Length: 307
Image (tube, rainbow, N blue to C red; front, side, top):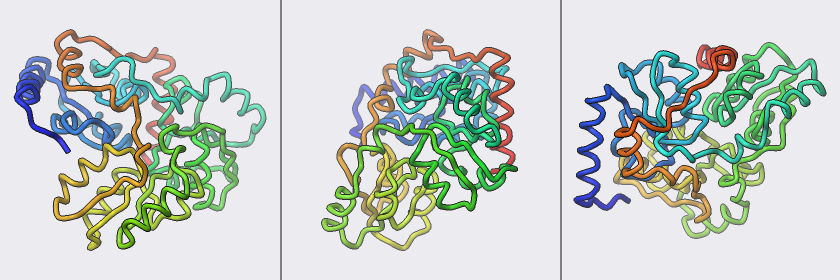
């Protein structure tokens, strides 16, 4: 939980001043530090951030997340300036596939449509037919006009989607380092310690983990599920940053992370100080080459049209 300090108060006040000066909006992912979440104009998962980026009345979008999220904002908002609050924050899963890798896989499966998880570079999105997020991957694959789908780059999300659809889903062997660390024994041990708790896990987890869950949900879906549930305790199988939002929105309920390993180093790079410096210096501008942007936008627009 957040510990209020005079320094945090000063930084939060400075961010508010800078937002007014720049006509800026701060977009924050659910996995960010608690104090960063508290300065958000938009707080959510990748789908919520992508959708809301197009609706904000702001000239500058400050993305508190990782590079692919800032690229998505730039793809969808060509007339705006996009700043990545921490310029070195990336996504190891996104780095597991390159354009050349995807082209080779497309040659191996020429009849397949490519559904690309949003956790990927703009260049890979530009080589794809559809984008998806963990919240809408099943809906996108079901809507794609092909019975054969090449799903990149997350093998765990792809396997989950395959089990929910009647289509042949060919999965690329990428994965999220953070979610992939969770094993079945972590779930079993957590359930022994909290037998009344409802188990919610992210579809980026291994199949052995999702098989033990009560629900397999994206972070936004977890937030909605918890709010509507009569249960009083929950075991959370996703990056620990979400627990702050869940606890803040549901103070009468209890939340436990299923494994202490559920910490994403890249998501935790962003600090309040970095947000302020980025806004003051107008640094870490994220832009996508126009040819790539136009192609990638087609895949993102198809996703947004479905959901």
